[in-house]
Image 1: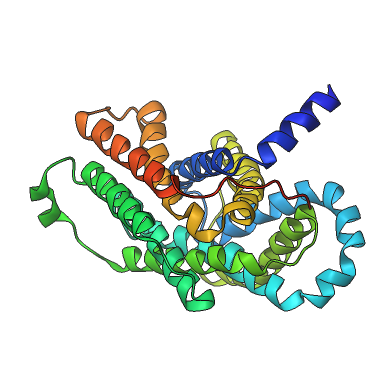
Image 2: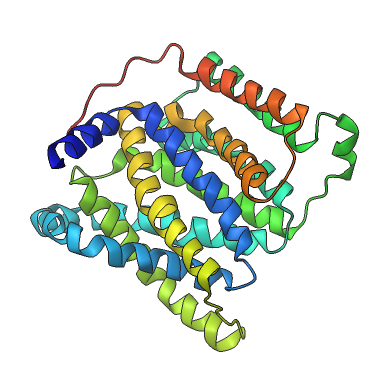
Length: 311
């Protein structure tokens, strides 16, 4: 049984597009679930608890790899810390802060701008240019997302307002674009070591802000069956598995290669809302989903087949 599981994981670990689909599904679920328990926790508390659970789960599995990679970890401490602060501490916390001051629709639209920021940061940091096909694919997928959000009617654009929550989420997405592009500088250590150290450093960076929120903002934490189940989901699936899968996909196809897949987050978020929140599936969902999928297909048509990389 162990051999079958290992073989299956090794196969999955070298399939970047399958890894990306699963990652975006997990993150789509994170958006739905985070909104569900937003009233039970302050944004800093939610982020701190999320990563704390993830660190606790990973510790017994990761320590031997961290010990083996310790010299490289010390050598590359700066880049690991920058990735931890941007991808773990700031990004998720800003999303949780922003969602409290905006609508779900606005947040979804803002998330759809992630590929644009990935391309911008890839160019700024590494002068990596976007191909014409990638640009067309991104625009086509983004049009599909907007078609869903505005319900297939351009008149609904007039009712779309921007507030401080939207700007906060926009900053979060820009920071995650930076994290995604910078992953190419990830040190050559075991993926368990990298995930664990970024989670741990990100968690430690959140600690003083978590204490500040509890002591000065009057935020209470309410634990019940639903909130605990949601915390477990976002800690295991949206944190541990999603980050392992996403980082591996970036290693295989590069930041620009994964960019268009971010448009699957609102797609999966909408599907999960239909299933679990009772929202209705309408024609503009189907048309928009089709545009997103076709855009992703266009974006990867001419990319070279990824080669297996073993860490």
